Length: 190
Image (cartoon, rainbow, N blue to C red; front, side, top):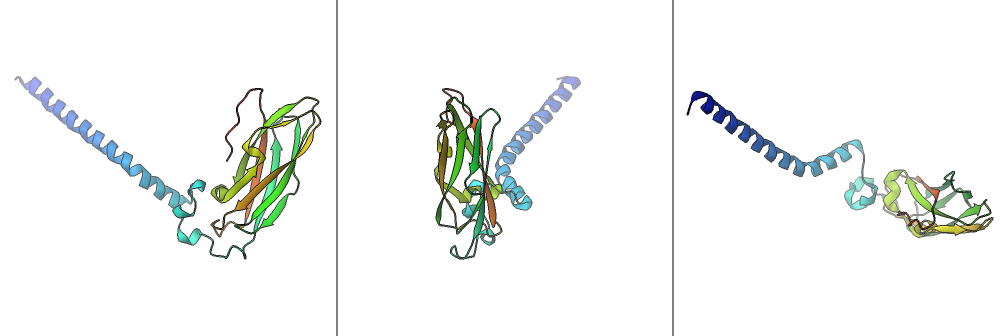
């Protein structure tokens, strides 16, 4: 083997080892991502709302008895400009005790003279409370169709979990109503 060929073979073995080491490192990094993400969330205070109390530190879970604690739930409604409806909560806020079931109504009116279908998309703020706000019955579970000029009350039955973190004393439930085209499927609602 000539000297240039021997030097090329050494270089090739070195590159092969580096690439193998890189592949092993990438594989290990893939396994390390989950604990690193958990650490990042813990350090920055970001936490998935749907994980619930099991994934939260014990200090963040409410220690006040459910009957003694009062949470203010605010309600809000908006309508996309393409939907000719008025949509408002019958009441703007309600004081609730975690673990109890409550019902509130939203009022929707079709301002047009034609039949129109809409779908409500819910959102909870702060987002950390999302997994603790449970809709038992909601108009957002399916599309709503109103005839021209029709006005309806839409009920919402809900409960706030007693496991709601103790630092959250107020939350807002917002609905955005969107117009649905004929034959368009329902949107996923939380």
